Length: 547
Image 1 (tube, rainbow, N blue to C red):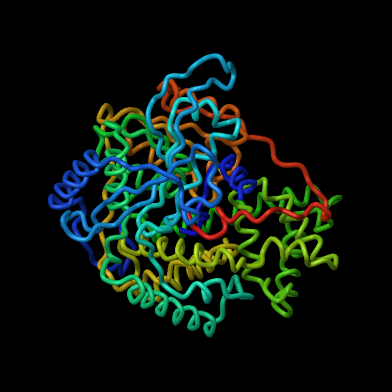
Image 2 (image 1 turned 135 degrees about the vertical axis):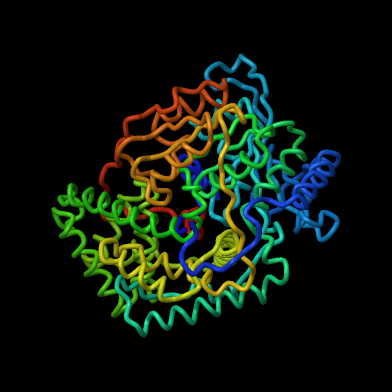
């Protein structure tokens, strides 16, 4: 699913300043977790509980320039839970102890409530930096009560990393991004998808099939045990909501509190092919929101006073970049990616609009700063993309007939051209995947089977469209849905909306929930900045992932 590897809004700001299955799908494994995997999980949990985690100084490879107090360690899990005595892999973990200091009253000691584990999504995203979020004002009360715990899931970073191609080739630029590709271009991308799938098998070896969402959920239970927690307190964002929901269905008695922020649609019939089509449609609506905002600030950006005129300005820029790449590296593909990320966070809007305006008025430098690939992050980006591809391809059946992809994406691109084909190319290796596919778990829990789960969603979220939150709410019995109305930020916990944060804090700190549904007014959209201010810092935490 085309989405960034995202932290919540406040977290991404902190990390910036700190250095039924689709037709023709392939067959697969059993539809429910097997008995062998269950026994293997019990073995791994018992071992982790006995071993714990030997926390020490953080390696620069895990958290460069780690601040005082942050500690790192590893937890061991089986590569294949059906064979818990077979090959073992180690997941890196980071932790910042609870401050136990009330930020509103420094003399008051706050009782510690245990560990809070966070996953930012992807698949392919790490939360090793997450414990540093305790410095953000919106998270300080939570950081007082909880040890903040981040980790790199299997395949990510130094946690048995996956790779599908040479990182030096991964960020090749400039690239094209046709909204309505020619037959010749399609053949080119099909060849690339086939080669990428073969590269995953060649570079990652026989263990590739074990990088799945079900195993991510099992790993989470082993991590819980290694942390010494009888029950898990978990916040998952974006894709993290999916395997968080799997965890809730597989280990309901192990859940203490769970927040699912920007929930993915867990309907097995939509994992993952249909979810990606839904996402592409939603990005068209979010792109329209962005264009409307730019048009309202035509006095600043001079890109057009209607959404249609802004689209023409964007198309003009894409055409120029196709003829001559800005800085030799920014073509239509890099422009599209830069504006796609604005679909996640509206605080990106001023910088993107200013860069586009500056480019069309003769200054390409702001656009190059925003959109040019960063060679220093190539290995991280390639790794994240490899994990994303492996997990989504392994998780579920995908169409194996190109005609299905061509039909569905051609039809959708007529009404949603902005993201549709770029998303299709991202996922097309799954049509040629060399490993067996699973059948997705049918996530359902009855009321009272697990503690109430708090689901957070923005009504106009593009990366995790709002119907997914409604479906998650229906499937997790006793869950509560908090909606930020008429807003589209992806990941709203600890962000700019005080109403959302009030529900978030009340749940994590006191276990209090609203009724089955609650609504918050939208946060304010950002003010416009002129082209002279289009020097937005590169946000590597959101540059290379997906959901």
